[in-house]
Image (cartoon, rainbow, N blue to C red; front, side, top):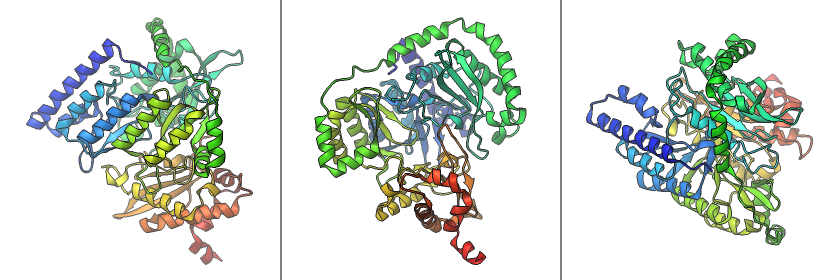
Length: 555
């Protein structure tokens, strides 16, 4: 895990000092809200429906127990006792007083954390595979790359006031757990035919009102060329990207309008000029950064305790089957802690829960936690011998829900409960769906099924790439929910297909229930997932379950 040096600490202290003065000027009236807005956005502060909101960066989703405990402190001392983990591996505090935010930022700095560039038209928090450094299928830990990009992009003078925000993701696994193709730019660690390690660069992905799948800009980039090539790409877009319409200002629109070949040619031209200016310093920095991400000294122990619990306790076995993933080290596993108990708000964690997870990580998880874009918390390194004790602690804290990848493991944005941009509620819909399928006791029979909900067209809930996507809209002052089917957030990324007319608020949960029950009738066998069945049969097979009245009328 990266540790701040003297420069990092001094830089952050000065930024926080400046923002404290800006807040004082806003409160005194020396700054209007319009004048204050670009200053607060540079420091992760939004003005939401009911209060200011502070969005804290969790770079590439990595936390120590001390950092998680500090996040709990912020929730308890300056908010309402909880925080909300987002699809960008950040945490949001929805109720701070503006006068308290400088103190919150100083408290974050004590544990090497900040809120810089979590908002505004700049390069946002760099995200990564939440299993990075632990996954059995990865080439190498991609987090040093993410940290290199974070350091390069922080306060980069050319990229502080771009036409729109710019999102970057990094992954090194055979499976895509970082939604690479939905980012403005993505870095995928690959090997060429000669066995050399390098990077595949994707560009032009994004969701929102114009969803697009990212395209390969460079199939294999040598290690030494990574940072100048990324700078060339962002620089080209910053110069030629549209600024006449904020909805068309993202790089995906630029790629779509000019074509990938034209963008590639311009990037290569700019890259040729930039490459020599780096002088190899970026590689020296990269080598230093990598030392912070050395794997822990994995212990060796018997797994008899795990085997005994697995064979004797059906609740433990259900949790283990659902919430554990393959680890690269012998005797170890990756634990995903669901913070989506049926009926709870997806992504919310109380201060007490944060402290429990921090304590478990320190005692059993080599002092590491991760936040996933799926709004859950990960213990990336756990020896199987410790799993019974971990499960007992999670159960006592009511954090033992066995639903990872199932119907109730729903991604949802804050929606109209908090967000000033939202046009419909997301959280209550997610809660009702999860509760309903818990009542039906069908989750484990259904198997892997990703439902994703957004409360407006900006798609913070990633509904476009949900197997079932739900988009809440305003239709003449009434909430209306559109359903999309067949989306996919993996390396085979796909944008979901709109099913038909939307549903009223009180109709959407019954519609999802009919749809999923229809899938159970249509699937070939228990091994065929919802997405596989949809790809085999197409939309026409599922529409009668969503719109039975139309089917009856047609008959």
